[in-house]
Image (cartoon, rainbow, N blue to C red; front, side, top):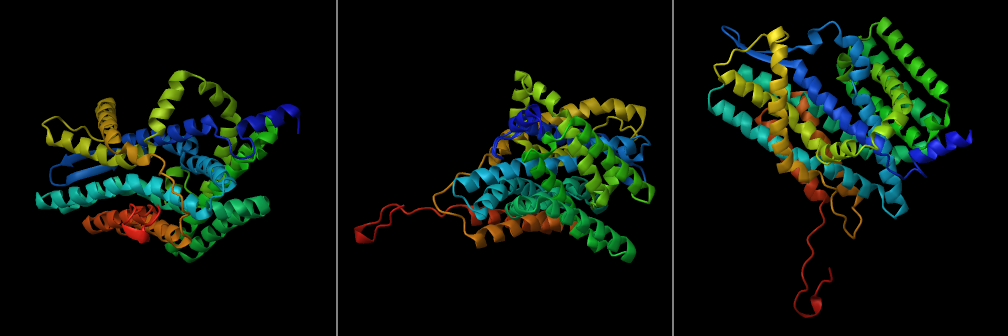
Length: 432
């Protein structure tokens, strides 16, 4: 390894604990791409005799397939999550923290912003039923706003598994990532051979754990220690593998491979990781600009709130427009495309207000003197994963939303420090 390569790797992450502002930029960019993509994907109109008709505009275009090989950014989001997560875990471990303490911090930062959403959805669905909105329309609306919530279940799961996978990575990095890739491939083979779609739930674990593991490899400087030609060859090989998978029957549109995930996402994650490493120097220069740092900091501090609320807010904006006498152009028409900037502006303004209200829930949870019990961390992780998983299986209705809000609240309470009693009277006083 050359001295210049070593210096580049050291600048990326020193001893596995330094932050990388480029990764913050990538995280923010990923969420912005998701928000804009959903804005362009969803179109709705009230058609006489048919009621509310929701169209998925982007999926009906011919050009979205090739574009999705780059623009489907969820794999790289999990890669960046692995990079940031292993850095946080190593810092915590160095200071004497335990796996349960890491899980506590991760679950709280996911559960707290999700509680208001589940409460709002439960109340919104109840109001729609009470005001006589067509149940079919309610089902369409709930289906639309629930589609991003699979991320909560998957991301909470892989982050809860991170300390253990980090240990495996330290002891046997090649074996660990190979096992995860092989498990994802085996799940696909069994699923396609048997027709049992439930096997896709196993893929949700192996595929996203694989993507997270790639973040560990970036954090350790493995990619940075390779020449740019080698990294480009790895990326080209990953995309050739992806093309081969499409050739044998996998969907060419990566949006169709995302939910449930399959082995095509494994190849896409490796390809996007290579592109990220190659783009890192240019992105690092971009992060030296004060404006870029300001935008990344402003959005990054409320990123989960923006992600969770962008579709409910978009649905609300579209619904309000449909209630006005303004014409509703057919989804995908020239007139529909011309209305997108106005819809985007209204959605962004509403998201700004909501982020001001709930963005503070994303602040790092306060630490406490005592370690989190293992049982509390495990139970809280289950309470975090189950609500979005229930949405995936049963859809969003009043009971799922209300019970989800209760379970998320339980997760937060399990991980919150017990209030210390003030000094009591007499010799039985308890020292806080």
